[in-house]
Amino acid sequence: MEHDLVVFVPGLLGSRLVRDGRDVWDECGSALLSSPPSARALERAALPAGLGDELPERRFRLTPDGLLMTPDSMPGLLSSMGYPDLRAALGDLADGQYVPFAYDWRLSHRLVAAQLDERVQRELARWSERVDASYPDRPDDPKAVLVCHSTGGLVGRYYLECLGGRETARTLVTLGTPHKGMAQAVRLLTGHAVGDDAALGGDARTLNEVLRDFALNLPSVAQLLPVYDDVVRVEGRSRPRGLADRRYPVPGLPTALVEDARSFHQEFMAEREAHRRTDAGGRLPYQVYCVGSMAHPTARNVVLSADGRHLVTRTDDSLLGEGDGTVPRESAVADWALQDRTALLWTEHRHEELAGARALGDWLVAMRKGQPVSGMLAGDEEITLHAPSEIAAGRAFEVSVLGINIQDRDLRAVIWRVGTSARQPVVFSASGTGRFRAEMVGEPGKWVMEAVVKRPMRADRKVITVYTA
Image (cartoon, one colour):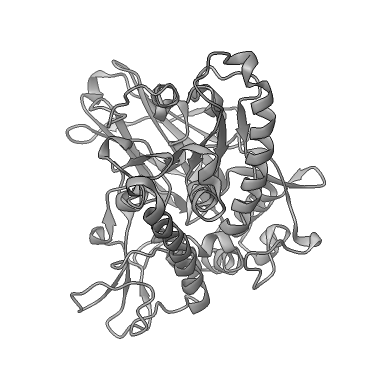
């Protein structure tokens, strides 16, 4: 395994998309936040309606120009810290042994999986010609190790089971992959991504409409709709329901998108079951490892009014479950593949940081060398930074840090605007056992807050998107 080709597949937002040398999504995201939201801000990154699994016309195409290296976000859906230290987390790889697979994350996962197939075949052939120089005593010919963050795992698994990749892969690693989808995609696609009835709903209404109209034409987002059976709750009804329940369809959610999400999942599962019948002992010919988190409150459900006519968007802790802040815990588990629970690993890091060296430590190195790995990648000394993912400019908001013995661990915190180097200190004050808090007012833009403690050294970071109402 140590001599295998390592291919990294990033998630949504994880590749820079450029046209004429300019980072289109970065420019669009900045324009969306710096003035009252309008569809015009996102038009350069938009796709035509009804694209499906095809490439768009040339005028809609963007070029993937390498991995994202700085933090970014799609308000109301997810954030990414970028992948500046991913190569270090993989250990001492030989020249040419690591392949970052950048792609257009707006497009269908089926289409991207076909592009991954072509890339892996080409790179594996190249590496096979060079592997002797670095691993002369290898036990067999090299195969591919796919390390996939977030939605990249949906691309990776489709490639393996539906496009024949299982013949050339030795390992699939998913880091916070929403194997069963995520409830936040429902809110985004119905115009309720940011805010709730009690807080930011009015301020965020225009932003939500712009984000919805943009996301409705992104095949990748539609394929994130949850396929677990209890995602929808109806006020006054005890039995939860799935998105495909026609008695209580989610208002504003196009039926075609629900059907595409289901067919994408069902197509994969049908291939998996067909292979299970012919695999020796029903076991996959490649190993699967899943890394997930259960340390952060994560949206798991959506609620409809008793008459089913509108989505209830007020904050309700009963709708939250364990997860990484983006993907619910159970959705991060590839239960279609895990052959024993030692291949399921938990961390306390957020979704956007699951592909970083800080979250993974030496685990990926041990996995590559075939050494035993721990089932828990974090300990009791971790801290958790709580802050809103989105907030209206000029509105005061609270941030807090939780952890054990923080009062004795020299808490320090800073905040900075993405794309700048100036760090502004944030002063926290004690507020109850193990809790420190601060109050802030944000300026428009994408910001990163980081809290750090000592003895032992631990840190947590979060992207905060501040928009103009």
